[in-house]
Amino acid sequence: MRTKVVIIGAGPAGLLLGRLLENEGIETIVLERRSQDYVLGRIRAGVLEQSTVELLEKAAVSERLHEEGLVHDGVELCFDGDRHRFNFRELIGRTVTVYGQTEVTRDLMQARDASGAKTIYEAQDVSLHDFDGDSPKVRFRKDGVEHEIACDFIAGCDGYHGVSRASVPNHALRTFERVYPFGWLGILVDCPPVSDELIYAHHARGFALCSMRSPTRSRYYVQVPADEKVAAWSDERFWDELRSRLDEETADHLVTGPSIEKSIAPLRSFVAEPLRFGRLFLAGDAAHIVPPTGAKGLNLAASDVRYLSEALIEYYGERSSAGIDSYSSLALARVWKAERFSWWMTSILHTFPDTDTFGRRIQRTEFEYLVASEAAARSMAENYTGLPY
Image (cartoon, rainbow, N blue to C red; front, side, top):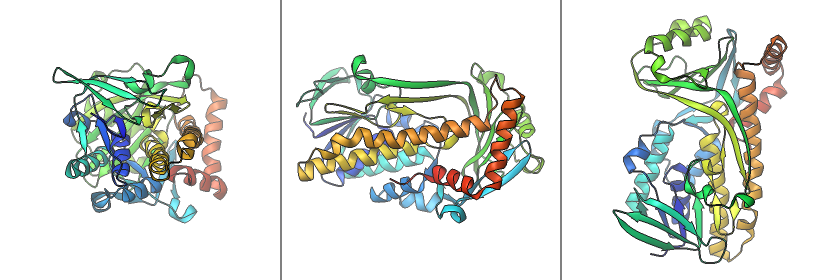
């Protein structure tokens, strides 16, 4: 087989890249080691920056997003029971949209299936070869048969544990990482959300988040130790703990029900540099991880894809390598700003094992400064809704 770009990974980053290239007549093949049903079964966040929505519009996959997505003008922060709403539309004229990552993936899958673009699921033993030269190749096994794809470029969009970053020689890669001593225990319930917008809550017992997927489906989280086990948490225990961390009014209005999904997500910050290795590019979780506190994971993947798609379109349309030469530096500049914001949100909203009374006062003062200062609130709003390109 031969194609122009082999995309490793059929998550939202890989599928969005494929869609944007396809719309410009650039042929791609997407390889995914999991089944299509498995990919769609992943439960992930779904707060989209305005620029991510605009990129999905450009990819012509936004019809259902606009029908079902929930446009939010702001968020609420709560600190030890004191709640304050930050109105993004009033502060900076921008919004975010709540639309699940699973739904973004589904829309992209359906668009790719409808166009006839090639996606190979359950591709085993994927390996990347010769990407440091002019003729890269990808090998894989499907149904017991070995295959090879010759291509011009490889886009590694296969996540933190994928083969793409692991294929880069250690001496060529530099990584930065911070692992946090806690995780988020989350449940998904078919109950109306307690608020029309997200509520981020800091409490002495730990962080909590009230979120949603739709007007009838809610997603709630509480901070737990990193070594906590899901089996230790009954639904009743979860609801009791969540109520204890919320302000009284929110706790009283909480509608509870049986969980339809329950899991613990560890928190880490991670960045790999650079993002280009000859004719191999890294994008999305293959390149970086952020704590979910700042709602940046999917949006950073879209940011990488925007830069990379523009670079490849320029290469094939103008025979210019300027875009692919600058991809890594452009993408990483935005990545590190998102890493900073996610770290900052995490640091003020969570309780840390080593936080003393001084640290708690600093967290409280940070919250009070955000409430009192329009400049600080605008900065938070700008980062949360997405920095400009």
